[in-house]
Image (cartoon, rainbow, N blue to C red; front, top):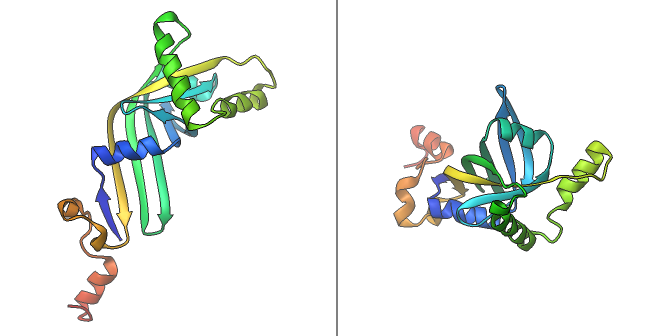
Amino acid sequence: MFIHKMTDDECRSALQKASVGRLGCARDNQPYVVPIYFAFDGEHLYGFTTLGQKIEWMRANPQVCLEIDERISQNQWMSVIVFGRYEELPDEPQYEPARMKVHQLLLRRRAMWWEPAYMSDMHRNGSHSILPVFYRIQIGRMTGHRATPDIVEVPAQEATHLIGKESWVDSILRHIGMKN
């Protein structure tokens, strides 16, 4: 297996394809990670939820991260981490275009995009008075890695990004003289 550093374009492409990620936030030195549905427009990550712990924590500390991954097999996977800043999009006239954008982006991803937030709130509070919260994450930086089972699959121009050039098994076999 070879682990490759993903380019910025590869990270963005992975974010375009993903719709579920793990949002990390922190408050009072306590991390909190929760799965979320999101949409990516090439510049920001957008989400919708109801009032609860993650919104309270992100309001207190807007520094967040989001992780997405895909696992095809033990030797073939990818993972992207986005570091960014939470920005709430309140129900005010100046935020209406951004709120409509979130709505459209999420609708394209999933027909009932609002359902997880509403169902969570109903189970948590037993009520039907739900306050929607639209938000976006401004991307500060991102990093990604992907694994491939064999070096043959790596294009020549990407060969410089390899983290490992020889598997540990090959290294052991070479050192004990069983492989040239």
